[in-house]
Amino acid sequence: MSNHEPFNGIEILKASPRRVHEFLVNLEELVKIVPGLVKSERTSDDTVKTTVRPGFSFIRTNLKQDFTLVEHVPHERVIIDVHAKGIGTAFSVKSTMDLSPHEDGESTKLQWEAEIMKMTGLVAALGTTIIRSAADQVIKQGFEAMRIAIDEQEDKTSA
Image (cartoon, rainbow, N blue to C red; front, side, top):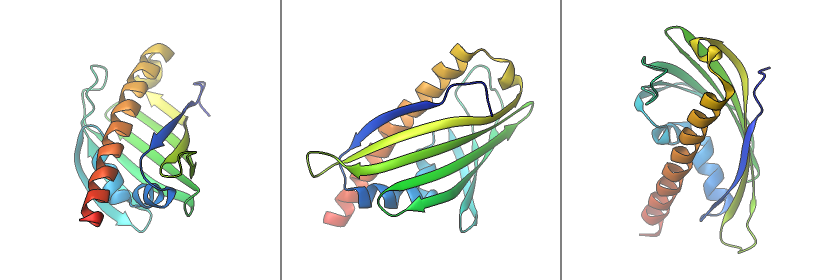
């Protein structure tokens, strides 16, 4: 376990829990929204390997990241582990996303938590404020990209 508090929040997405769940468990589509994605490759039914070029001054190298679908309950819950490593740094994050219909009847309430499970190397030496700031930036970009991707998929299916 890490000494960092988990990140968490609630996002309202303009799609049904079914559509959001489908997006989250399709790792090949999901990794396309990762900020700084250089390349990706499916290596098993439940894992996609990626190379990411983070836009942070404290990580100047490409990171190899494995996204693994650990568990999912259709239309309700998705758990994904991300293991990342680069020159002089490594970390693991467990993300849990709980889905439920939003009160408007047309959207999804996505309640999420991301917990840093392990952090070693240079990134471990950074202060909590820097890590939280960087993570908040990536999370914000990721949810913005997710909204766009889900909207685009919805447009394709309704066309």
